[in-house]
Picture 1 (cartoon, one colour):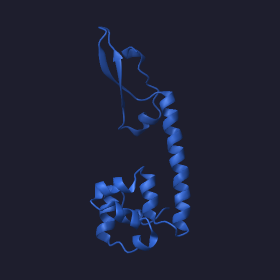
Picture 2: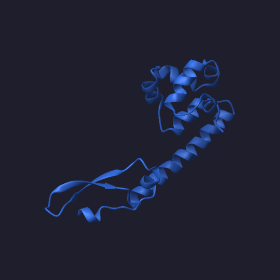
Picture 3: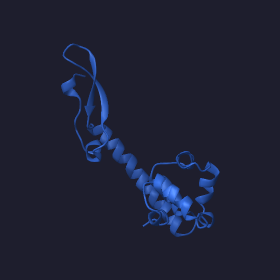
Picture 4: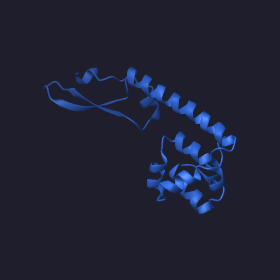
Length: 133
């Protein structure tokens, strides 16, 4: 693909303002160069589909939170496309602790210091962390 043929369809990557796609294209001298792209339609459709699945799954988890089966932490982990392992690595808590706190009875016992650490990693405040609305 030549530099002037690199897709610039926008949509997903363009809206984020921060994410860009690096593509490799051939310049006028026949050498490969990195070219920034704001996306292309097939990739945008795949990203939209993936996010729609995450939304659906998040709604199911939200129902479990409201029924008392899971804690709000389980919802926020999934909503942020994380796993307990990933959250543990960012917070310094163990995977076992994070999994345990996904159960309401254990989550309710967390002190503000621990909630604050988790909330900072998830880029929210404690009030947001303890709710799903």
